[in-house]
Image 1: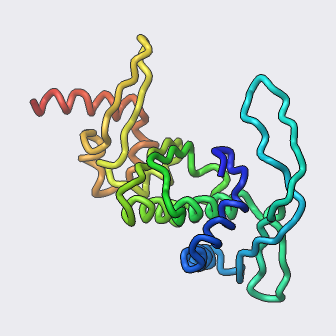
Image 2: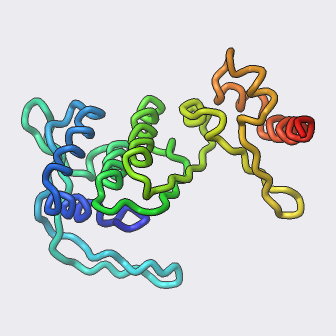
Length: 214
């Protein structure tokens, strides 16, 4: 699967061919999150080869044999293609695919996982990513976010504020060192504290708090 998500169908097909039980576990987890679906189906159809990732070139798509992703509804037996489902469904499926790869990646970089995902689904997505880390010791997940809903799903020691300084340097502070977080954690969620205080207040307090503790 390309970084853009291109090739998800073939990646799923590889998992199915490599270890059917692994694919069944993937499908079962998917259906727990989206109970309206009965199955994930990979059906041969005309496709395109992955274009060359060259920002200075015009991508030329070449037709080829491939497989399409289809979802069968739990009631009625109707089937729809991946083009007809929401971005959130496909994003969850992509995360589950990465979780079930025979050799998961060493580093997984995720930019703003809240994009295209209903806030209620974020807990499912973060659960998948936590499983990715806990079930094997190969993959490190690094995530950026601007969503307080995402921050709410982490502990203070798991969240770091990164701020660019005037000289171009980037300061890094853990929320576990923040005075407002320490004072308000019993009353408010991390996302609420972050929203109310803002980056500057949290980062400044962290720095002064660190100095006072030395």
